[in-house]
Length: 81
Image 1 (spheres, helix red, strand yellow):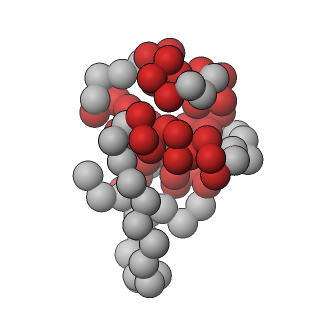
Image 2: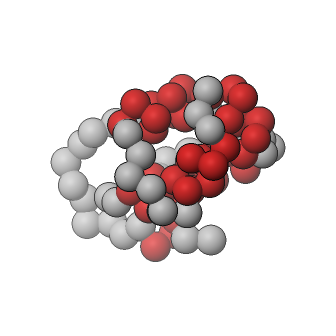
């Protein structure tokens, strides 16, 4: 699964897609990651300024990694549900 993320909202959408793809509820992800369910909800909906540590905790729980690369000309429109 590859997602282009340029904003916190894009990261939230990518995390939601990964969580749903794995069949996890927000509550299950909260238990697995140690991140509050409310924080996950806010992050997925672009309503929080999550700490980078929180994003990495969620990525680890979802077996994801972040790759930093040169900016492309692609769009993030495909991330919207």
